[in-house]
Length: 163
Ligand code: FEO
Image (cartoon, rainbow, N blue to C red; front, side, top):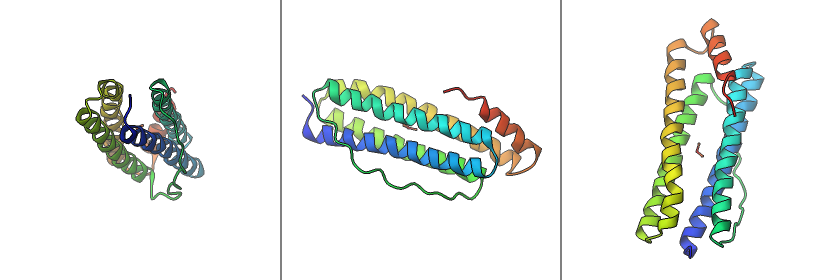
């Protein structure tokens, strides 16, 4: 059986995943406003992925017979300095999420909760991918800068991301 502490921590993580979706949707809105539809599309897909992460944990709690309790989602920032700045923020945000997942994992080890460890392994792996993707795009943006033809090319490249 899942401990109350573990259940509460996973409920908090569902909230964090949904906040991530909200943050990326806000970034998508910004990208639409500055006419970068490829960036906006990438962010919308990212937001969908985050809802998927939240739902994976929702299902896990349900499978363990624990109650899902949804809390208010914080308001994300609405203004961003530049396309490069949003990927800087994306990378930093994903690093924070990784730290949260690692804390959850440490808690599951402390509690000898093997099923939760198994569930969280997926998230540990996913975070490696999330950080790598954000870091790669950020480095490319730093190289090309925030305007000009190269930015349009990056926009087209980002538009190609599938869901
Ligand atoms: Fe759900 Fe981007 O981590």
